[in-house]
Amino acid sequence: MTKLKTMTLARSVGAVLSIIVAVVYTHFSWVQWSNWVTPSWDLGIFTQLAKAYAAFEQPIVSIKGHEFNLWGDHFHPILLVLGPVYKVFPSPFTLLVVQNLLVALSVYLLVVLAARFMHVVFALLLGVAYAFSFGIQEAVAVQFHEVAFALPLLVVSLGYLVRARAERNDALLARAALWAVPLALVKEDMGLTVAAIAVVGLGRSGWCHRAFDLLFPAQSSTVARRSFFFRVSDALSLLTQKRGVRTCAAVLLWGLVATFLSVTVILPFFNVGGVFDYTDSLDVAGAISDPLQGLLLMVYPWQKAVTLATLLLTGAILWVVSPLAVIALPTLIWRFLATNEGYYSTDWHYSMVLMPIVFCALIDVLARFAPETAEDPSVKKLPAHLLQARASARGLADKTYRTAIALLSVALPTFALIVALAHMPQLPLATQLTHDYSSASWQENLAQKKQALASIPQGTSVASDLSLLTHLTVNHEAYWIGNTSDPAPDYVVIDQENSAWGNNPIENPPQFAADTYQAPYTLHTQQGSIYVMKRM
Image (cartoon, rainbow, N blue to C red; front, side):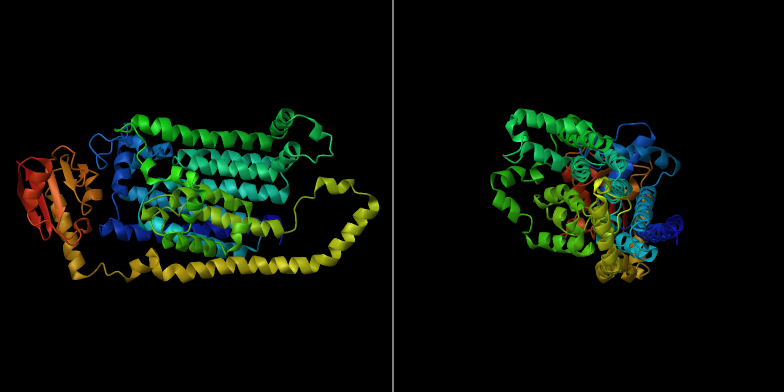
């Protein structure tokens, strides 16, 4: 089969798989949404943001706090694209569909990339393993987050990095760097990921090797006689000689500056407290002052070791051999230096951006061993007898080499798929199938939630626990009941069975509302365990 036919087939197969993935995850999201499953307040927060953008307003998100501007929480200007989409489809479910489509798009791009270096069947297997990996499933299960926008950008950018080495193409390095640029607009820490991509690009261009030789030459060379200042100047001058190197250098600077400015200037400027809220979540200073302690924090507590082992297995272990594995370090470091267990465990959405890195790195490993699609220009300069000897040696080893590579191209995608399937019973897609949403108790509680929501007039302000919070965002000014500094809302909703109250349900909801907001409240309606209080 010709390369053109192979890629055409890969695009068709990738498109079919991406459609299946979009349908599966959207069905999953619909089951969640229609049964009022609310893992956290995040979908409500992003719904209020999208609603504000649709109205051409700043993202004032009352769930986070009264007059809280979300530009002071996380740096995610890429979410401006949600405005027109929400304008047409004004529902929190819209955001879930957008996220699922972004996942599906990245699946398509990954399959097409993989097919360049392995049989289409095994590219498909790798695509399935990626699509249903733990990082993707857990992120979809906890509903919408801005990092979903990073998936297709990462696959395209890293795909060009893989191809740049295989095809010895400087222009592809430039494309890899340019596709990484928008990642810095996804979230404040992603600028460091952009910088890591640029560093790998510089290494792949050969600049790092040449710069090292200039900075630290052999003592007997003429270069060693030049002062260190001039050697640094020579190394920096190499950055301007090729387009790929120039672009990677510029993007490296962009990534670092984007993260620095977002954390130190932009976020504090819009934050109500004038600070970056998550500074205290990371013990960066402690890790720098005590490197050994910082290293231990990469594997302890044990949940971190579990996360690392899961990542290792997800990419068939060998993905860490690729230089692309370095790109995962910024995300892993900030997560593992965090004091919040949710950041470094395998659940929630924090591993989502690592999945494209893991699988593209695995493809890169296969690409490194695959026959090169472009000859090294320096080979042409060899004497005729050496060229002939080289051709003979390659011919003798060719059959054995290709057999070994073919086996590897089969084994690694198969192993990755087996790992994904082995994890499946513990992951959200499987656990949702075993959940009985049709039970009488669930349906009764669901009906009570709907009745409670229907009893609250549209356009009013409502403080609620997670039970009704997301659904309130469409037609109400929703507050989270945990923010006790908010002004007294028109209505307060308390579900005594909500997990927010643990094993200590509120015994007197009207009095609790009055004490919390320092205003008189009376019982408006009670639907089972759900109490709706109205301010008098």
